[in-house]
Amino acid sequence: MAKGNNIHIPIMGILDKLTIEDLDVKDKRVFVRADFNVPLDDSLNITDDTRIRATLPTINYAIDGGAKVILGSHLGRPKGKVDPRYSLAPVAKRLQRLLGKEVIFVPDCVGPLVDDAAKRMKQGDVMLLENLRFHPGEENNDEGFARAIAGLADYYINDAFGTAHRSHASIVGIPKFLPSAAGFLMRREIEYLQGVVCNPVRPFVAILGGAKVSGKIGVLENLQSKVDKVIVGGGMAYTFFKAMGYEVGDSLVEDDMLELVERIRKKVTEKNIKFYLPVDCVIAQSLEPGAETKIVPTQEIPRGWRALDIGPASVRLFSEALSNAKTILWNGPMGVFEIDAFSRGTFAVAHAVADAYALTIVGGGDTDLAVYRAGVSDSISFISTGGGAALQLLEGKELPGIAALSAKASKQER
Ligand code: AMP
Image (cartoon, helix red, strand yellow):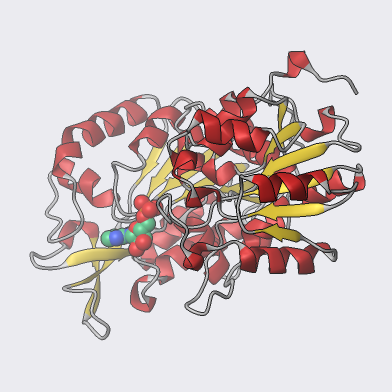
């Protein structure tokens, strides 16, 4: 849903898979694969519950429909072993508060204890299983493990967009054994990241940033037939500058990408897509707090210095380029925004995106943190909950977790 100053553009359904609304969940045991991989502090307090909140529409829909809701998720990387630091117990507590009803928490995700608890469930009950990754079968996509979880339920719902690019048992294994559908979060992610990007209201501007060009080049290649303008900032810009023959000092450069970026830049400009790079940058000799910083034109980065943020002239240029946009996709910060001295460019671009009269999509990962810190999250139309999964969709690739769901043509009886 568009917010703030942004235009509301209804998204057409593009998902050719079943969604939870296609299933009659009444009195059925519904396994919902959620992404409850939330950050925890040293005392195991949840520091950001966005991911839990993001799945509430699906959970509430199933509860209201009279389902018995069995939730599964991973948390962190316990590497196939039980590790109390990665227990989902704090998630059960928070979920209980957010739902306003009891959440049964079972200390495993397979075995007789879990089977018994699942059998005792009544309509509207919610049960959360312990971390799926406490078992090696999860990441190994073990068929026996997937079958054991599938045995708990009548239907499988995937709402874990952030994990949809992983071929793990709970993502691609369980749906082999059950009628499977997308939850509301999954559907929204696909509709925005695939639907809008494939069929944008123009002008469509993509802003790409972040550390490395190698992480974003697939997105740039896929978007080059769809965008009207591309803005490149962050560390990845300096591989482009080096390829153009500029002195970039100690700025981040991927030498093995030089030929490729030059080829893409030429191809993009030949297609008459407007291509923007920073015109100035904030430089320093180190990332140490208190290190001297300077603002210089990008052609004048001295040896021994590195570019760590875009400068004020680039902010004006990029804001100008965004001013007539109707659709904006942003993935990757403009600088090392985690450090105050190099955060202004990213925050200024966050404000320009938030103020644009456009449908605005932020592509997850670090960029969602940047818009949050800039205080403009509420003015962005859609913020993806998936980092790697969002990138893969934007690269035009199919996600295993979406491919595994039942096709729309094979609708279950209502
Ligand atoms: P990514 O995961 O590729 O989107 O990269 C995000 C990271 O890029 C952030 O942690 C930023 O600190 C980092 N970053 C952005 N701009 C630069 C830069 N000019 N030099 C080094 N790192 C950068």
